[in-house]
Length: 185
Length: 237
Image (cartoon, rainbow over all chains, first blue to last red; front, top):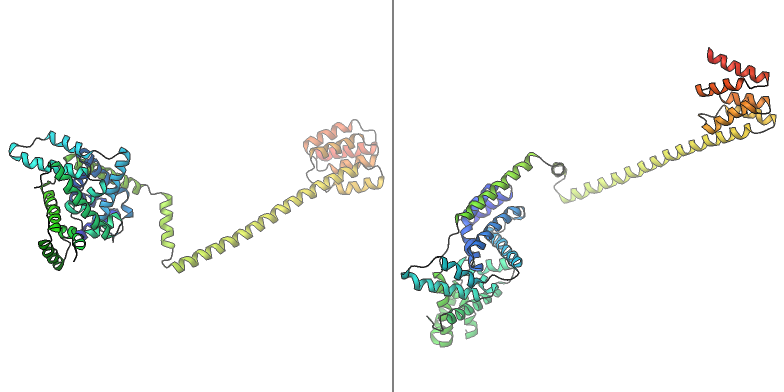
């Protein structure tokens, strides 16, 4: 994936060639979906939020500056969409309950039970973290964003991001350890 | 490096944003320090475990909704292109006329401001002059009418003779003035005053002619009767 071409495509979208947004959608919609899924734990809500992000891209396309990195700009929109969603819902979605419900609909085969339990524990451990810590782990571990990019996205110093990631991994480890019944693996 | 400094680099170590020298320093430190080693192992374990979380695929509904939205957006754009707004056209025109350099833009804005102020000043002055002249004309006309009526009411012969001269300058007398003139022709005490009033009513409209014909039958002065008859004869010719 060529990031420079992302910017070129978005510049074309900004200048009126909105067809090019289809290319960017194909590149980023799965990534955005997983970002929202790990934040909310709900597949339906995550799909709605992906749609909301691309509607906002069309709405605010004129504000895109060519020198901005497209992915950062897209994640900024995604974060705003999620914040607005939480405001509407008044309180944060109970991630643990959402994951339980989702997995109960798709029972794992017997040979994968252990792996499914591991996944469930990790999702529940993530769900127990405050949004700020959960988000920074998702961005660095699953979305592969660098310190600099996360700092730019959140509008803070790189040192703050480093310290936050360190604390978040530590808290996640504690939560996972407790969910495993105190058995470190 | 001390334990605190080493621990501060653990996140860099896990994520991989670290140079080779620092990586070796951390590895050497944790080999010797059991406390730091335990913490790094714990962090590393959970960080690695996160890798088992699979990437999920959204339903096809997401794609269908996106393309429907994009299509609708394109149609709206097309409609807007077909019906360009006046404001958009004006914006485009001004954009083409506007110089590129800010200094020239400022100069142009200043010149336009000066032109606007000057034009406004002269237009206002011209409008005020025109209004004043119209007002003065109305006042002069009113003064002439008032003077003519006032003089006709004078009893002295000298004033009545002056009346004949002034009254002929009254243009378009109002209804009140005409009624006063007709009353003077009908019933003024002096013959001269009746003749002056008759003279002031010239040129005569059809309504005045009718009134004068009626007045002829009630006249007692032969001179006034002759003048009225003469007036009617002129009309007949």
